[in-house]
Amino acid sequence: IWIEMKLGLVTDSTSDLPLDLVERYGIEVVPTILVIEGKQYADGAGISRTDFYTRLPDMKIFPTTAAPSIGEFSTRYQKCFDAGCDHILSIHAASQLTAICSIAAQAARDFSDRVSIVDSGSLSLGIGFQVLAAAESAESGLDLEAALASIADTRRRLHVSAALDTMDFLR
Image 1 (cartoon, rainbow, N blue to C red):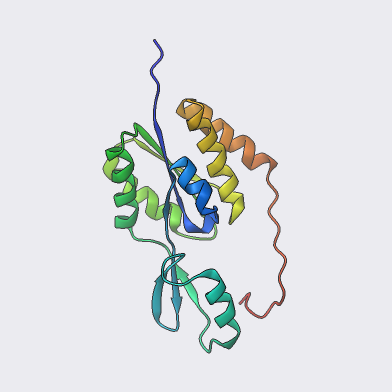
Image 2 (cartoon, rainbow, N blue to C red; image 1 turned 45 degrees about the vertical axis):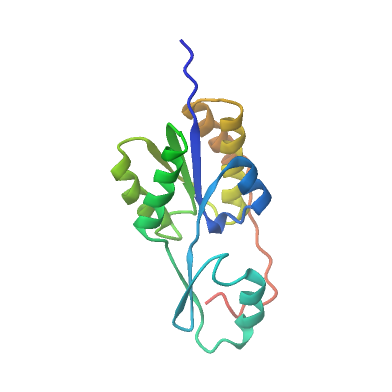
C-alpha cells in the first residue's frame, strides 16, 4: 500500500534562500536575531542586509547574533501541521557554530517524532541547497528516507567558500 507523506520544511534565515524559492516550495524560514548596539532585529524583517552592511563599518559595538526562541520554532512547526503536513524536516546551520539546531530540537520534542532535525554542517547557501534538495524530494512525493538521502547526497557534494573584503569584522 502506497501512502503519500506530505513533508513540511523549516529552516533558519542563515540559509540565505531567495524569497521566490521559499514561496514556491512553502518553506518556513525562522529568522535569526541580530543584536546591533543593544537592539534586537529579526534577520530579514527588522533590518535589511544592505542596511546592515552599510552601517557595519561605523558601528562602535560589534554586532552579535542570537538563535531564535523555542517558541519561534514551535509556531512554525504547528503552522506546517495545520497546513496538512505529516512530518517536518527542520534543516539548520552547523551545530558547531550556533545553537540553532539545539533550540529547534527542543521545540521538536513537543511534536513527538513528527519533526526531524537536520544539522546541515554548513552555512548560507550550503544550508539552502540542502533545503532545496529536500523541497524537490517533497515535491516529487518522495518519502522521508528518500528526502534525507537527497539531503545527505547534496551535503557530500557541497564546498562552501567565503571571500571577504576585509578581515576587520571576523573578530
